[in-house]
Image (tube, rainbow, N blue to C red; front, side, top):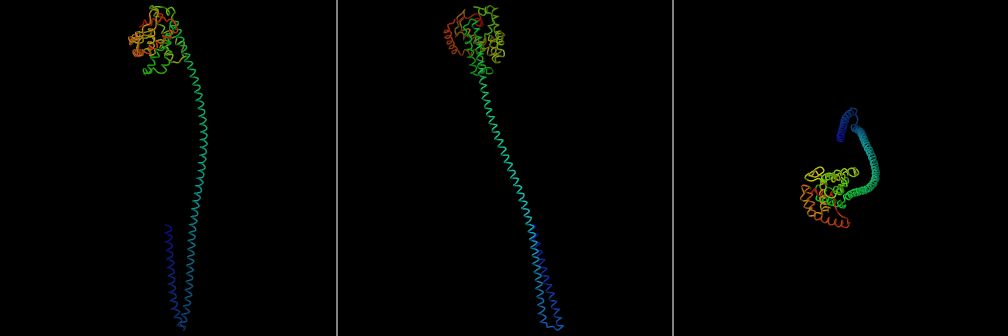
Length: 401
């Protein structure tokens, strides 16, 4: 827009200058013509030769015109010079403005470059700081990993030591339990094999329940692992029964039988007294259940509390079958062993009255395995060469059937 206005202004000035030149030339011509006419009239009056006058006048005019033209040329040259100077000044001003603009742009770029350099330095410093932090974290992580590994090693070592102590403690518990049970069996003038046999029968039934996922609310690995020890304790209450009654041959009187029935409650009290909080809660509860309730009957006619059905703990229901079965297949002073097949018939007949029908069916279903075990135990008893007999205390179990 500015360039267009500059061009228009230039054209306007050129037109004015041209008009001025034409006006001056026309004025000069008119002046010369008038002067020539006036001088011609004057020369005629004074008698001057017109031709000579004309030559002088023309020469004068020519010189005058030449001077005027020279003045015009000088004027034009001055005008051009002035115009050129003005244009030069304008261009100089434009160049100065461009230089200023370029300088400002350069200064701006310089500052921008400085900012970029500053930003780059800051980024480099941040990268260095982050790298140092990462290196520090890496070393810290390595230290943590070493500490973790060391702690894991210590935990594993302590766990192994604790596990070793627990196994030793459990082994000691089992030895104490079996020792106490064996003492009771010897005090009861038995062979001492009743404990082992009943434990085996209990283990057979429990393994079947676990393997076939029956009674999963109770039967788990822990249940299977501790019921054998609980079974060994089932007659521990007999230690509180008088030797006169415990070792009496033959049948109990009614009074003696009532005293003998107390061995269940007495046994539970002995278990709590001896073990208390020195064995884990599960073991204590199962030992107490087996000792106290193994003479309860499914139909509620057992002792000591007349519990029935599932009111009787599962461990005690299992123990009841094992205890009665071994009492029946063992020889007594007043009778021979009852044949195994007849004992299995007794178990089946009393299923639903004396015994849990489900457990009785499971036990009878393992007949072949049980017979094989009885044969194995008979050979062991024969090798020991110890007489097998029973007292009224054992015969009382058979009398209940």
